[in-house]
Amino acid sequence: MRYLMLGIAIVLFLIPSVQPLEISEYNITFDILPDGRVNEQVSMDFRERLNASTLNYVVLGDISDLRISSDMGEIDYVLERTGNEHNVKFVVPEGTKMIVITFTAKDLVFTRDSIYSFSTNLQPPDSERVKLTAFLPRGFAIYSDVVYPGDNEVLTDGERIYLEWILENPEEIAISFKYYSMHSDYSLAVFLVMALAIVLTASYLVFHYRKRVRTEFLRGFTEDERRVLKALSERNVCMQKALEKQFGFSRAKMTRIVKKLEGKGLVERERVGRTNRLFYRK
Image 1 (cartoon, rainbow, N blue to C red):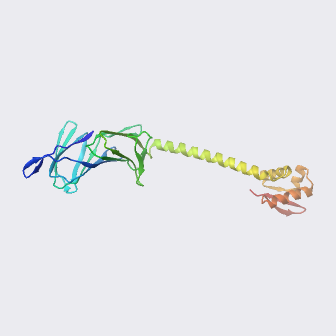
Image 2 (image 1 turned 135 degrees about the vertical axis):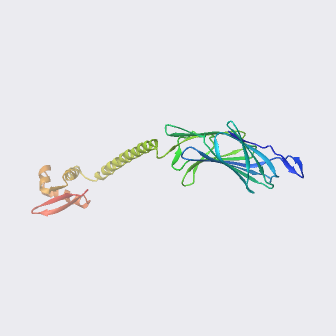
Image 3 (image 1 turned 45 degrees about the vertical axis):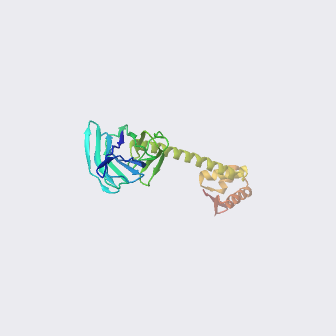
């Protein structure tokens, strides 16, 4: 949990005074790395420019690579650590409108069975608007719809998936969600199951579509014509005389059937002596 403690000692004409701090916008960005570390950026936009002020910022947890800057330039700081608490003291220059604090946190992500859990608690200073953004590592995705706070958006910048919250006047914020690597065994299993389901569904639809189309198509033929067509489809090549003998049709009747099937583009015939060699066209 991290929170801002604004104890201000402002020196103006050598007379101590207190300037009320009004933060118009408070933004926190969590950039989650593949190894579970989190690059965190906290930015505060003040409603009015500050006088020269000494600020305290307290961070709880294991952090490193602390850096503080403002719209006026880099800011030096003094870091005091007591147990798990980091107390950061720094002086902002006259006219400061925005402060940005960045550091790397090492205790916000936990892993179990290839599923990563992100969790943190925040107690932001009084602010009209708080914007939170959590970027997943490249190649990772949200594990389930259980994301807290629930009023969030899942977005992408074309390379990475990220979560975004915009909160009005929050007093305390708890953030938690789970994510996983789309290249892990779990995601591969999910992909294979989904792919198999898609293939089976597509095969089922194609089979029934073809069956329905064939049924509709064959309604335009007589029973004898369908019998001849079925026999040809099973043999691919057959002599007309053999079919006449198989079905007991006269030569004239078989010729009429063959001409109709040929006209539908289902049969080709080749003259062989006094009969025809028939080719089934799929």
